[in-house]
Amino acid sequence: MNTRIYLVGFMGSGKSHVGYRLGQQLGLPFLDLDRRIEIEQRKSIRDIFEQEGADHFRQIERRVLHDTCYYPPYVIATGGGAPCFFDNMDWMVHHGLTIFLDVPEDILLERLSRARAH
Image (cartoon, rainbow, N blue to C red; front, side, top):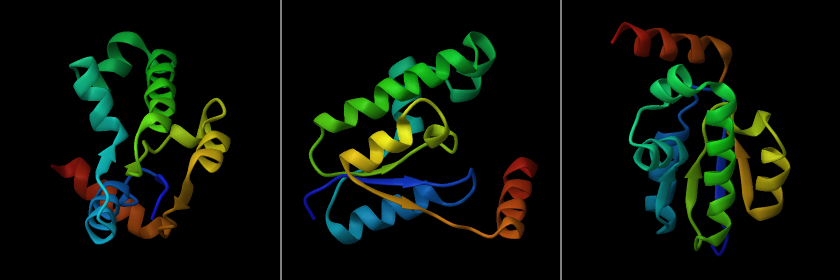
């Protein structure tokens, strides 16, 4: 496959897990956009939100997302809110294959409840 694959979906939909596995199966590198932001900013997503605000985080997210157009083919897991801001969804559609992970609400709720308990 000679394109970037953008995985979108709600928090807890499995974007990172599916992305890693898909990358292995297709022989493509995997990138978790949130992890890339944390490495670049040297702080957690939570800390960015708390210390600098949501608007600042969304600006960083948009820039890091747009930087992926310079990458070779990759499987890219986006943050849960990434498609909802700016032109991010349209941008992904025009720069690769975008796949929505459609997970039933009850499964999302269970996953998020379990994650919160830890």
